[in-house]
Length: 267
Ligand SMILES: C[S@@+](CC[C@H](N)C(=O)[O-])C[C@H]1O[C@@H](n2cnc3c(N)ncnc32)[C@H](O)[C@@H]1O
Image (cartoon, rainbow, N blue to C red; front, top):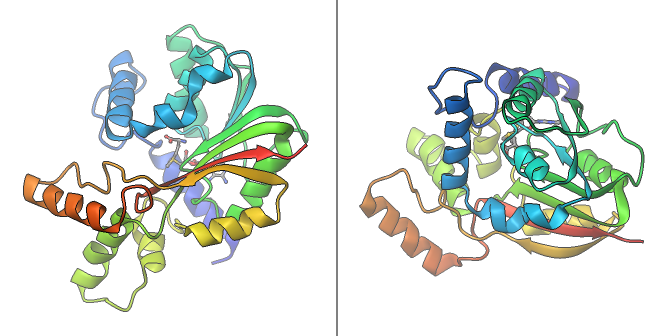
């Protein structure tokens, strides 16, 4: 499968079900539906608030790459930023525009767009934000370079990508490969086939540093604190205790599933 074919598969996957809606049973596009999406997201991923720092970007020009069902995008709009949002899928754009209308909020622009060819001029945004997106795109480096290109010199970039040396990635390997009699299948291959859309990647710190080394950015933050996913929040207490023990042994700030990256574009 070439990269264009893979991207079509990624697009079909997220078009069939917008991100963050898989556990939501309320009527599509109703207020209760959007409320349930938001409640679920910030209950399971509360670190988003301290990482994104939405209100710090009041009055700034913000681009979100990969808006999904629009939950974080709404926070940027509510914070008073001038907001632009793109996603590979029409379904994400429909979710986000319905949601804005429901709350009587306005964004500068929400449209279909590819992270690997961002439809904006160089040096346009004070902040470019992307949570859990570019590891789904076949060419992650190209997406990263595009994000840097459209950010203003001196501007901020905030990204989350999946972290391969994490407890969650290890559980995924156990569940989908080792316990299914395929111990030779690597963590990368396991995630490629079993983590959301086909072809999903997860990176090590070293790989990310290598990618960043050729781009005009300074690293402000690069860490991977343990998340609720790593702590098996959805499992029974004994499993959670084991996960807690693993976090104590392997490190609370570097074995989490979400690699948090904050960059400043050089002037
Ligand atoms: C896991 S969801 C994350 C969505 C949102 N950021 C969130 O956290 O809820 C991944 C999203 O990335 C989008 N996506 C994947 N590849 C993309 C690309 N090349 N360009 C833009 N969006 C992409 C998908 O359509 C999907 O909406």
